[in-house]
Amino acid sequence: MCGRTVVARSIGELVTLFDIDDVIGEQPGITYNNPPSLPASIIVDRVLKENEGEHAGELRRQLHAARWGLVPRNSQGPANTPLHNNARIETVLQKPTFRNAVLRQHCVMPVSGYYEWQIKEDGSKQPFYINAGDQGMLALAGVYDWWLDPSKKPDDPSRWLLSFAILTKDAAEPLAPIHERNPILLSQSSMAEWLDPDNLEDPENTTQALLNELAEESDQVAAEVEFWSVSTDAGNVRNNSPKLLEKKEF
Image: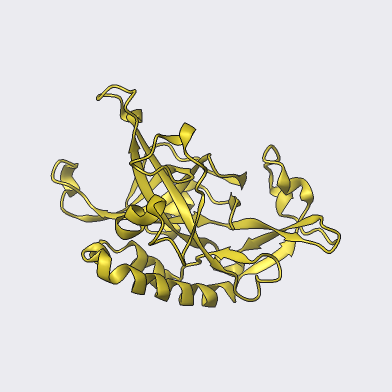
């Protein structure tokens, strides 16, 4: 699973690195220990509608702030919905919670890296920082949805909650010794394919093939990542500093 992420780059750097056209809303910015339920930046490629300004009809790459933990549109809202921060790629099409999102609403979570906990022989847990190394950033495949809060007035922009979940798969080497699952890690080409709205025109017939391709390419990206053990301080979300990324032998 993926439960804590690091974004050690500014929003301006994300815009440059990922060719972002529009930054939508206030972004959470740099963080060294971001857990589910809090906002995170996600990338979406979408064709703007006619009422969306001078770029209407154009394909734009946008950076949005979204709640990490999918709240499906037909749910009772975040207060009454389990925290769906991860979705298994093997079953995501069959699960009602994720089906609409995976068929129609794809996103990417840009991160410098993420923490994963290895269970040691004595039962204790050792955190590792898994990161892009010289690649600079990791792109995690995700799905998103919008939930409408019926308690808020129609003219209140906060009545719409944007949320997302990260896709995961059986861990690939060299990550398998750390944890049995890892996020779907995207290459530059597979990221473009995952975000491409053209791939959503016939989702019932194309999504499974696309997911299969992502899983295969994710293993190739995983083979290039770097990782090392870090302090158990990473387990406390109140700790949020660059020191968490320092190597700690155990």
